[in-house]
Amino acid sequence: MRLIIKDLCHRYDDLVVLDGIDLTVQEGEVLAVIGPSGCGKSTLLGIAGGIVAPTSGTIAVAGEVPDGCLNPITFIFQDFALLPWRSVEDNLSLVLEHHPLSAAERRERIESGLRRMGLWDFRKALPKQLSGGMRQRVGIARALAVRPAMLLLDEPLSALDAQTRELLMEDFLSLWQRERTTALYVTHNLDEALRLADRVVVLSRRPGRLREIVTIEEPRDQRLEPSAQAHLAEVRDRLWHLIRAEAQLADREIADA
Amino acid sequence: MPDTSLPMTERSAVPSQPVRFRGGGFTVKGHRWAALLAFVVLIAVWESTNRFGLVSELFLPPPSAVASALAAMAQDGSLWQHLKASLMRIGVGWVMGTVAGMAVGFAMGIGSVARAVGVPLVSAFFPIPKIALLPLFILWFGIGEPSKFATIGFGVFFPTVIATYSAIDSVPRNLIRMAQSFGLPWASILRKIVLPGALPGILAGFRITASIALILVVAAEMIGAEYGIGAFVLTAGNLMLTDQLLAGVLVLSLLGLTIGTVLSILERRLLKWR
Image (cartoon, rainbow over all chains, first blue to last red):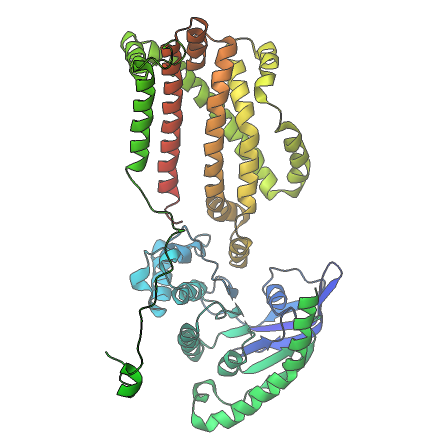
């Protein structure tokens, strides 16, 4: 599935947060969005997922959805958004209960999602009994249970420690290796973008405008190879150069506010 | 495993002293028997003030006399008669006020028009001492039970409205957005996210409204009732039977304690996830 964003603008009252965004996320592509704090990254994701109404502009999807897809555009949240009163398996069940599935199919989707994320043994646990990394795995398993055509990831690793982040990046890599689900990945972390994305969109400080789109040529599974490091370092420098001054200005603006 | 990464001279040559522990205090510890002991001491002091003639039995009868009066009430059946009447009034009035209050609170919690209309009305009516309206309710509903139900129900209604809509406000918006992003229907979001998410706040409101119901039932029974703990306490006071008066007060205290315990059990059962 492709996502096509055309001339998107968004404002909160008098505050313009996004201005003139034109962007296409290609089928099977992982597109990372980076930019300074407050540049509208999360708003862009919310608009793309249909939970924030844009002030102007259009968002459209094109292409086929996979078999058994129940929610073509599916979010993975920064704060996991798990219901604390439901067990792990019931959190997955929540997103299936309103669909006309047989009990067996619902069970199969829950089991398959939990097994893929290594959570089957924790299916009866409450979210409070899990670590941050495991909670995010539940969030991923919940997303997988609806067999999405496109994932919208809102800084999914930013609430986690460095080691857990590394482990979850491996999970994402193997997910995209297997299923090639289209993804729009918002992050403030350049290293995440460099590890996971096919292209990186750089937004300017508020109002967020598209500054540049950088393509990462190395295949995802070879980016830890020594041969790739020189080029990746170059791309990193370029991305950092693009956002450094903007990030400093945005930081000052936030401090002044 | 010992740290052998430094040379021996670095590890042992310098004289050392233990780091002083400074992290004590400012932590609440459980003292299981302290509360019981406090009660025992209080009762003992109270009993001894009478035994030693420090206080007249008429003004403050000793605990033993209160216990005897309570036992006598239990034996002649008057305790159950009064308790039954009070419990029925609390039950009916509280349920009426709670059901109506939750319905209005829910409407105000999820509907902006209902909130715009409801907040000023609730703010205007909430501070009225509800017992002041009892004469009006007697005029409307008669001296019998309905006026007492109305007083209790009215007293319970407003705090329930406030507790319910505040509890709905406190449901994390990210959970609602998550549910919307997965396409959950509106009614499912209400039932599966908003209601359970608001439950801690609603149950906290129950504690407050249960106390209000207890206060109002006593006040209403003092104004116009033959049976009920409030009526019993008033009659005992008028007849200077202070041991019976305090027995009635003790029953009220135990009733409050029981309601509190039932709510605690309910909270533990329903809010295991917290």
